[in-house]
Length: 130
Image (cartoon, helix red, strand yellow):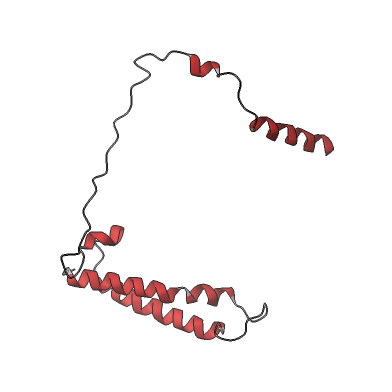
């Protein structure tokens, strides 16, 4: 066991030691064929500024831009109901101890702010006619 610890210590010291010479692989000349780079698709940045309008475009929702408001609305209500139930059952507003905390209720209470985000997404989609 002691030899293993000594070997691990020496290995970690060698990992952080300064390099005095350049590796031979870095010195080798590369040919023109090895420098060929595969084409990369560039992401087009879309303008999401909406300061001159009353509501943003659906593009600000990212992958949820095609989800209709009829989905976001009920999901927001369900998340709010579950979150409020979990806050009430978890007793988060009273004195907490290790025996009174239920991790599932604490995790479920995080759905309250999440429901607000779903509500805003529903509003954005409703304003954009989706």
